[in-house]
Length: 100
Image (cartoon, rainbow, N blue to C red; front, side, top):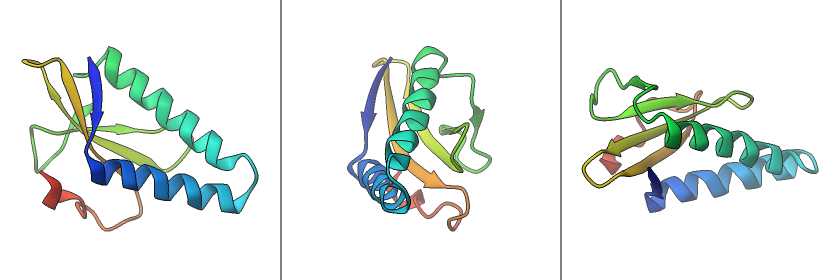
């Protein structure tokens, strides 16, 4: 599967990486490594993550180290996984729902 980010999801990622980079040297890179691990898992096993309870075409992949969830839509016809959001788990739920 090919990974493609919505522009807003890339902004989520950049903002969060910058936030962690300001907290401690190297923490932003650790954050990106955690995201990359989750993305690799999504690429290999796009059906393995739980479906969203409200938006059944979306799936949720939780990161291992950081409190983030990747919200994505696997399109099996095109072999593309669309990343809708990289959402902190303490943010307002479904703040990204206007993107779909």
